[in-house]
Length: 343
Ligand code: GDP
Image (cartoon, rainbow, N blue to C red):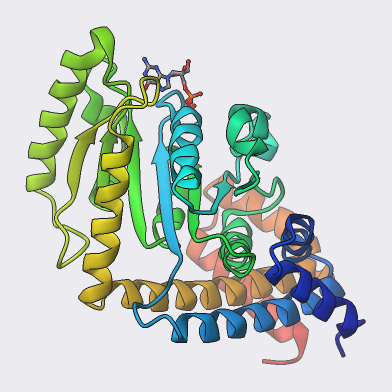
C-alpha cells in the first residue's frame, strides 16, 4: 500500500551512497505529515535501520555512530563551538551531522538553531551536514522526526551526530533522551550562574563545558568550573559507570577542543564496554516508538470533528477554573472513544 516503492528504494540507494541531496530529501520525507508520505518514510526507515544493523554487526565494537546532545543558554557560544568542534572532527576524518531541536523557533521568530549562517565554515565542509529544526509542530512531533533524522544521517555515512538545542523549555530533556551523551555548554558570565540554568538539566548532563575561558574571562570560567564540579558531587549521576566531568574551553581560541573530543571518546568507549551505550540505544528506540503512538493518538483526537467542536468550550471551562483539568480530560476522552466507534 506504499505508493511508488521503487522511488523509495532508489532514494535509499542514493542515501547510503552518501549523496547529500538525498539525505535532505529523506529528512523532508520523515518530517512530512502527509499520510502517504509518512508510509513512504517508514519504508525508507525500515531499509535504513536494517542496513545499519548489518553495518554494525560487522563492527564488533558496537554502534559506529556517536550521538551527542548539546544544550546551553542563548549566547553560551553553541554555534561558535559547533563550528570549531565540527571542523576539528572533519579534519581528523569524521563525518559530522548537526541537527537542531527547537520547537519554539516557529513562534518566537528568533534565530534558527542550525541556521547555516551561524556556522559558515562548517556548512561549506563536504564532510559536514547541517539541518535546521523542523519549524512546525509540537515538541513530541519534533522529537520523533529528530530521532528519524538521526538514523537517516547515520545511513548517509555520518558517524558523529550532534543534536543541538537551546536551554529553554522541555526540549533539552527530550534531546537528552535521544543521544548517547548529553553535554551542557555554559558561559562564564558573572552572577549566580547555577540559578540561571535549570537544576534538572545539570542532573542529566554527562559533561559540562565552560566556554569562553579566554582573556579576562579565565578567572570567571575557573570559578564556574569549580562551582559546577562541587554541585555535581551532590547530584545522582545518570550513569553507573561515568562520573560527569566539568571542563573549560575557548571556542574563540580553539583551545581545549582536541582534549574535549578525547573525553567524549573515553565516554563512548567506557559506556560501550559496560553495556550502557546499548541500553541507551534501546531506550531511545523505545521512546521513539512511544512518541509515534502519542503523536498518532493526539492527531486522531484533534482531527475528530466532534472533538474539534467541543474542545474550545472545554478549554474555556478549564481556564476559568470551572472544571478541573482532570475531569475535563476524562469527559473529552469519553466523547472521543465513544464517538470513534472503536473503543
Ligand atoms: P549561541 O547563542 O549559544 O549559539 O552563541 P554564539 O555562538 O552565537 O556566541 C555568542 C557570542 O559569544 C558571540 O558573540 C561569540 O563570538 C561569543 N563567543 C562564542 N564563543 C566564545 C569564546 O570561546 N570566547 C569568547 N570570548 N567569546 C565567545
